Image 1 (cartoon, rainbow, N blue to C red):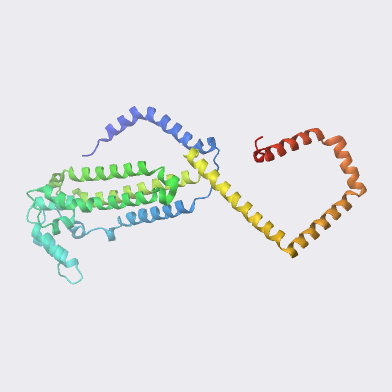
Image 2 (cartoon, rainbow, N blue to C red; image 1 turned 90 degrees about the horizontal axis):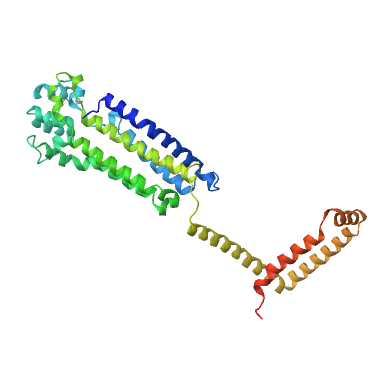
Length: 351
């Protein structure tokens, strides 16, 4: 059932002044959120990049399904025939379009079904496969065709929900994808329910008054195109949100306490590993006679070189000038004592 344009304008005029300012404020808050939490833009994480590639591939596959060459054949459109045309004339025209001039098994099954106008109307609602292949359907019970067409109807939605579950999994994209899991899943479920509702409640009897080809509403083919476009748009919006949040361009939030602790532990573990490596190298150098001798030689040469530098006249004058005019020795001494106490105090034994 179509909504009149006047009703849409009235709703926009009524809700527009309330919703537009809220939408603008939400957009600004989302855009400024990363800066408020001290987050800077960063490159796309590799896991998110792979998820975006998957979403792009699925969206493109949905859009390709809208191409005429990949759509199911519409016998009325390809033969330029009216809905009320006799079945024999319709399929004679169709046979003339076949390369070998013979009808396929699907064509013969449709010809057997097109015995009345009701079957043709259901064909426009549910498509050729439901009319040609359903073994238990009858034009006397239109709901039987709906039950048969239901699996094919929800299959692309279920596939898309599976893709959404993958790209928003914490195991795949971590915190960046998990933040959008609930919203994306709800959107996918709502899209599925809306699609099933629109197909099941479509008033197929409206086509019974179409006397010309241009008056016919090819609902099945139109709904198929809009279904693919809607699923591709959902994947595109999800990919855009993933890109913005993963690169800290919008929707940024401060790390949780658990994430901050985990990050600190990871950094400390790295530092501890480097200190252990330095200790191993130093212990090896001290235990080896040749390395120890080379180390003593290096430091002896270093001490002698620095003594010679410090005895030069220019250096002595520069040090005296700095000590007398530019350096506060008391402050430096105080800071050194505080630093030494902070370093050594944790290792002191209690008295």
